[in-house]
Image (tube, rainbow, N blue to C red; front, side, top):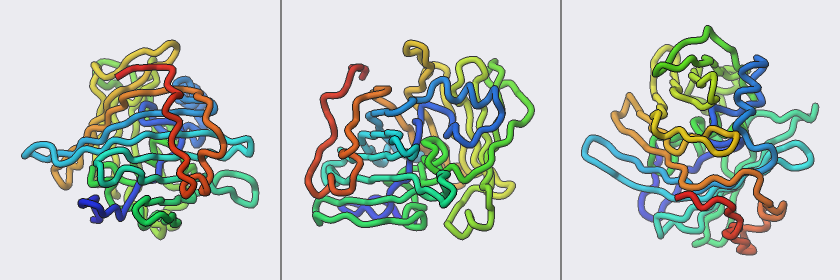
Length: 289
């Protein structure tokens, strides 16, 4: 798989809507209780986060990535997202812009448009899902993993399975699958289904399982100590992804979260990259490290 090595960034992520502190993109959920639970913690119009990805194997930490993430839903109903890479130093200034595509019917569809900007070359280029299907930043989080949690890829069906118990909590069990499995396979999809165990009371994911056919490939877990309350929302500050096939793991840490920040539209335009429009560093209403 393509990985981040030195100054080479050949594969990036495709994230989108609400946030890894949530369970999964809410738009595809049709069950009323599950939809209401998912939407309870989600941003309505915008989101800003500082995140860290720490990848390791049985010998210890291999790499750490720091990035700032911005998400906004525009007046046309489509969401746009931007990730600004801050560390490692040699990759600082690398940016990914993502925009939901719109079908002829006006609905969001499938793969988002993704633009990758690398400051060393002072140019940007469109990238595809096949380009992004490698592992993100040399970690265990792939394009599909982020698309699941940030929700830009709404071309899925979500089925509510029988409720269960996880860690002493009643959970809603949600299974998502590609709406068109053959098309998803053509576009480079790895997972045939993803099962999320959503805390029924706090509406945060306690466990997510990623399957390739009948084989469990990855597990994403949330420790009880990493769940906290912020006003009316329950949030997750840390998620642990285990790649069961490779024997590696990655910790995703959310260092800061700001819901509904005043993000300007121009910040999400492709032209903002070459003009050097930096992230809005002064927007943080919450100084939570």
